[in-house]
Length: 330
Image (cartoon, rainbow, N blue to C red; front, side, top):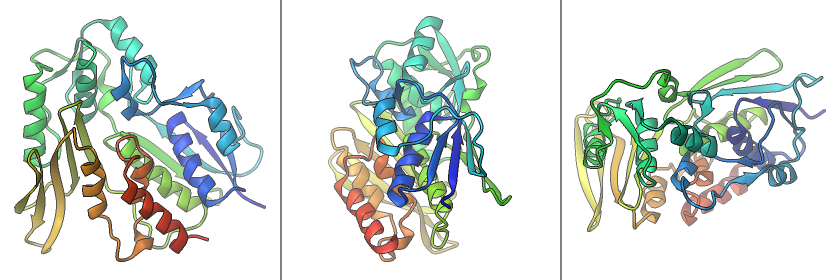
């Protein structure tokens, strides 16, 4: 008998998880415990705020592609279970783009606590004239140069306010929280931060691999930080912020990366990049260059970012995913 997997808490996580699981197994029963809206959007689709259409997945397409059982409060059989709690603004999930936009427009001026989620939300909102600010500068556990450049952009656009945070907005800066339980009692949890598509897709792939019993060579995803200043720059950071040295590499006239070096381990411990938004293909090319290609079966779940909004057009990442399925699965 094939196992089942019951998912609750996030339509977007459920859709990405279903994508990977259906590629791994057409037979496992997928049970969606929440009501799926007419459209499934992601946190990164906030970049389309104010535009006529958002490239969302419809409920009909979701059902046709992945054939889950929908709106099941409690499955009768023993199932793997995934429960997700998203960051939210007044109980509106970060992935609920249209509802989030309507909430902010209705609220008028909104001052949010400073974090990677709100910085990105403020930059997207600024494109359509939302009165959305963050209280103070970013002070995350990230490389100094990453924080300096993002704060510079926020200051230039007058998105940092010396004002207290609006009441009840603290949940927006929390990590996404995922609880995974197996029917035989084993349980694990994960914090997803930043809670954007490029990290959600990795965790969805990771848990789908656990469901099909593939644990060898699969490590827990490492956070990828991406901030988009629409039409201007994309800032990327991956790895450890605690490094002792670095090497700067110019990519084009307006794009560069800095390799973050650890003298203690004698390794490249991370990377920071500042990329011209007119050269978006660089984002995927840079990221793929840091994926372990000499042992293809170790590429997952890192290459799962190819299903995220900012990386989906990268041909090299798609080729790596195809290679993984040919060499490491089935």
